[in-house]
Image 1 (tube, rainbow, N blue to C red):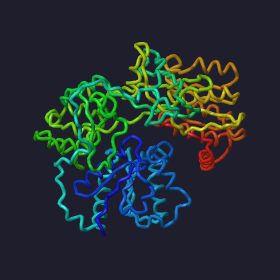
Image 2: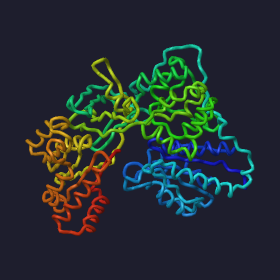
Image 3: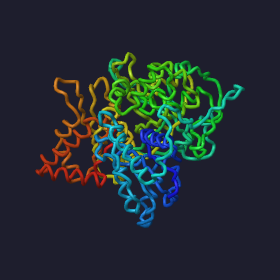
Image 4: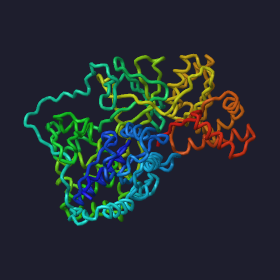
Length: 596
């Protein structure tokens, strides 16, 4: 049997699956194996019939959907025309990355496993189903899975076991080398120019939308800052309907960029080009211009404000010459040191930049060539669109809660994107935000008389503002909204708009202001209080029911309340009520969009 190239294909939405795939690739490189790692949609899926060994690493998004960078692969793989034994030469392994607090836990990995077996491929070892909810995160499953994987792999290719592996503390060659240019010229950023060709904006070609307004919509005395932001999308070719989401890449804070360049002794204005190493198959980071400035790289690309993953410490340890720092980094990289790493990094939400400051000797040893190996790329953020083009043509609105909280660290923790958006002030000069639009998971009925019941506490109301604007513009008046917040006077978003809709006979509104009275009242309580109305709308009038908002307890509590409505008003058993909910979900009459 000839020595194969180990192919690692990943589907990643937030970067965790990509990080795991790259970790497996590094382990393969240390074992001196030929290896390639790439997103599933960058791979020519027709070649799968001639591959020997493939490791699939995939996460699950939303309601059991595949990540964006494996959607084309997914569609191809599930073609009915594919012959049953077409992958009989393939040995495969799968790691799934999921979160057991969601109902469709690791759905993509499980479905992929089933489909590959149908096509005749052979499974090397049981599918690894990693869980974000575990105390030690996904690594609790991935570590033992990897040990098993290498045992199976070398049993299949025993001759490869004799290769002399690299030591763990030896740095691997960088993925890219930086070549600095002598002349410092103005670098114009082409991605902020309005595209002349009439293409739909996308992740690779976002549209620079002008920021029109950025207003705080919570009372100044309220602990939570929430902002209503409006963009001008004139000339963008962007179209969207209720339930769709807008995507954008945030930027790092100027003070973080400055500190990073100081720590690594980098001149932010210096310009460089990248040269890829052999194992990139000649691929360049798509979002980096060539040439690029260090400032652009650090501000718009490197995720220096994220909580670093274990792989960050593994790579950092290979540069450490200071004994104390080397020991600590090695401990954080080991399986045995994961509890300490979580106490140091994950629980207090310490950022990669703060870690560099804590390990000054090692940071001083860092070579610029390794920056793209050490720091993941900033991931795009998504927001539910909170407006309709029928009411606000050429405009796109979002509702953003600015994330800020305390841990044991002195500095408050801040959400990268929400803090960046909150800092943009159109009154200080023109501001452009590159963005694109994606189909959301919420779909609203086309029939004019079908009632729609929406439960959207807090910023969960955003997609329902879009839906209500769209539906009322189309003459659809059977609309019920359950809205919840802390106080009628502090965080009751869009209250005057709801009032106008109520007066026009276009909306029935039920509110739960949890802190405005002694007893806390939440949206699920209001759902139960209106059991008779809801039973009539759902059972007799085929209403659609929607839930949007924070994924902690609210969606489950609302679902339980709806189940109780069916038991109480319809006189059915708990099992039958559960079956009614399942049937509604299957037919698309019960939909939810939640985020953590």
